[in-house]
Length: 464
Ligand SMILES: [Cu+2]
Image 1 (cartoon, protein in one colour):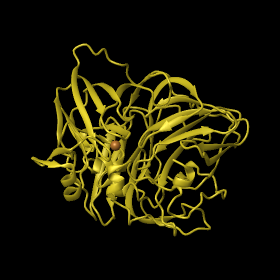
Image 2 (cartoon, protein in one colour; image 1 turned 30 degrees about the horizontal axis):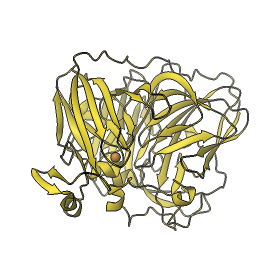
Image 3 (cartoon, protein in one colour; image 1 turned 180 degrees about the vertical axis):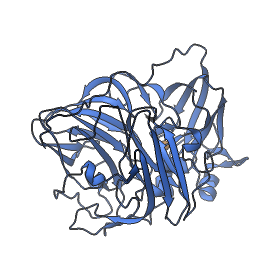
Image 4 (cartoon, helix red, strand yellow; image 1 turned 45 degrees about the horizontal axis):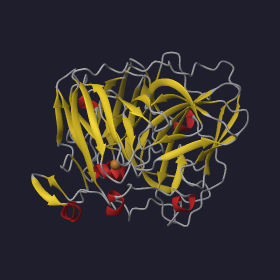
């Protein structure tokens, strides 16, 4: 993406004003007790483009963007009372949590939709420490684009969120010239058939190009979360500084150094940085890089808490002898090879699917939804999802309920085995996603480019 293109159509330039540093206090957990929170979804407004510009009307949890920082400790319970004061039904999905199926927040699949005025009590154990997030899952393509998401951090016993352990939630919004969410393009078939809804205004923790004060004289852990609907982002640090990647989608990894990191929608990376002076965090996916935040090592911590995760992943890569292979053939979208697909028991041409049903994508020849079964597997069965992205678009493919191992070249030139919950597949790529089906339930498997999912790119893997 070019910066010009990034801003195209709005007449907006990326703001360069310096804003107050986002901090944990600003994120403001609405805690009602130990690991107990109330999350109210309602209309709100925020200065996405600084105090000098109009507020943007949004849909928010806790009247902030991102929503409140929810923090729990590994092995604890998390309880969230969700209150829906929206004018539309909603649910909350806890992305990356190896959750109980009935707490996974997928409407019509794992729970009923929470209607306007209703509430739903989420309660589940936090099995793993790491960087997670939560977001609306009903009409996510609209609700997430309008602001319904927030960070969820699970800490090891000794960890603290302080200036050496910072949460950065990144989003790209599509704003009109008067800084409002571009609703006219919401649901655009062009977006749905191409790369999804790409924004034109990037924020970090709801601020445009913020100044972020971090700890000095100590390595700082940045927990990055890509909350965009569809934007794949690549970051680097000015001044030849490198990132040390220490966790991927929440799970600790064997640490490695890199000067660029890429995050597809819904992905998280925890990186250690050691800065001697203030440096810009830059978005560099185009040939016109631009600054997205200033990192200022200015805070002196007397006793920084440990902030580097254990190098061991949550669990080892399984021996895959006797694994069951499940083929998933992904097709569709613009310039693709999908001529027709099954939809609600009927074979329809892509033109009919698009024009009559707003469907554009298929798994194994079938347009997906919240009920299309991809596979029924036995509890504790070893599974290889052999996925072929037979389309002209990249896809951020997400499995609910469990992480999977994948030999990934997303960040490094040589493939590295990673434990992930969301994997960015290149055009034409074939990949094997490996896991032991140890979590019973109906688990969604879908593209996290939210428009692709809405247009058919999803299905269910049933574990029992
Ligand atoms: Cu996709």
